[in-house]
Amino acid sequence: MIGHLQTNKAKHAASLFQYVHSVDRKELIDVLERFGKPLNLLFELNLSGEPQKHGTTADGLKRMLEKVHELKALKPVGLMTMAPYVDDPEEVRHLFAGLRNLLAEATGSSRLT
Image (cartoon, rainbow, N blue to C red; front, side, top):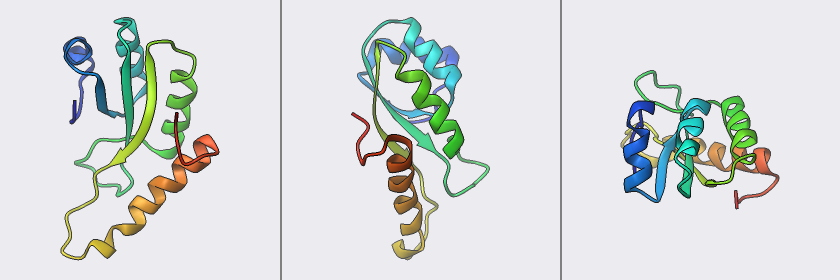
């Protein structure tokens, strides 16, 4: 499932999908865990700071990773972000480098699993 997931729709996502590409808050982790179905999670970060986009901060990521590692059904597998649309990809390259750096800081590795 790609896209913002409301907690009241989490039951449907848990029953339909194997991956949720947009985990952006601890409350969503709690709801997804209740269903007990194995799910692969990608954590969404808003690195561009755009108010219209969803995503957590670096501190929010650390808290979510601490939480998810205590659980049985949910497996963290990656990070994702949505960069602003620009004509020159070099303008947003730093956002993706920042995402890679956050992963390394949060896990001590370039991988979650």
